Amino acid sequence: MYMIKETHYKQGEINMGIKKGEIYKTTYSDKLYVVAGRWGRDVILSPIEAEDEECMVYSETEIKNLLKEGKFSKEKRCTL
Image (cartoon, rainbow, N blue to C red; front, side, top):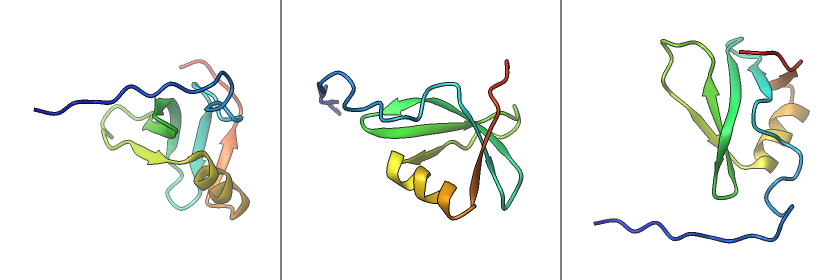
């Protein structure tokens, strides 16, 4: 049996700029990912392509570093 500990954060502590629904593109594979939500403080990126079921989990700092390094690019917001 597993227990998930509910963690409470002050308002604004988790959301530091990356928001649900934003689209990111990996420059190494040109795949598009949408921010599906959060798991604790980490950001869940879900692939847009239906046949791809593998999500990615990164901290917000890791995503910002990937953007700086040019490994991710932020796409314009669109309706899925």
